[in-house]
Length: 499
Image (cartoon, rainbow, N blue to C red; front, side, top):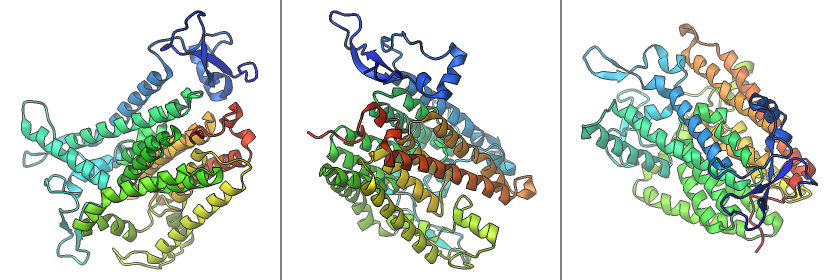
């Protein structure tokens, strides 16, 4: 095969030594320094691209998987250091320790993380069960509101369990400790880092002929900045494992993992539509088995909480419904630059934008219909990763609160859908770089921050780059000859082979 594809080399599996000959080709591998101009240019630092007669795959320890996992560990460690300034403490006037978020430090140091605020904002310090525990926000004011945990069930109970470990650590004595919210952040960060390592492992396993594509996930600038900004890596890890289980012809397990992921964050449930579309296009009933399995597991996890703690379970939906468009959204930018008051007009504080919510739901339905048309009109059944990426990217573009850490959803899917290093790294770098103007916008002009226009322009540029990446993916769907994966003769590595 290497003769037909000069960018491929045969690889020897070190775990299975040859019986007679010193080289036994068992895998054909893409060499990035031969196919990717960016990788070729970067390789000059260490002597240039791989030699044409180099022997690949003979080392027993430094396999591609171990290398990319090591890179992922380094990225997560640097990501923790990025957030470390927000974990510093100082002694207040009464002699107690407090987080040093004075003078907008969380914005100036660009270290803000939702995880740090969860400890007190969601009353995790109290020990009560999530969704049962409630508290009053702004008591005695016109905006008084009874609140509950507003995260989906799997995420909520994971945070509660780590909060209990935090309490044990702080109360145990005998070892160094810190403020409870700092210990809590460290424990959550360890879980999120482990989840991101799972994502890297999945991408590596999903592409045995392109193992170095996983390095794009491992060293992603988005992961560096946002893996600890929120708790999305938990759902991303579960969803990635579900897609790998489907590729390995285990649809029931795939559905179970996607159902758990959907109970941790809603977005993995959207992936069931591309799975159903690819299965429909291929005439493969295993797609529906994934959907049904996911529905059963999601219901089994959510129903007990929904039945016994209904107000707490509904809090996630209520909070999402009442939120106004955030500055990252196209809706906020359109209103700011044009003076448009929005579909709902001026709203009182806490009043939900009902018309905007309905418009967004309608646009998501349109995106789903457009995806179905694309799946139907493509000359060959589209690859699953391509449809998954396109749907999530489209939803984020029309969503009213596209938090920056949501980009983590797209990173593994983008690498699987379009393994071209230059456009992927360009897009991820833009997504990561927008964190700086976002933080200085929230700092405020009075504190030497940025005017809102600067941030909105950066957000629109980010959206344009994402749209450009989507165009490339659509092109690979409509013209399979331009697909880097299908150029190798593969059909769809993310869909199980008929048995």
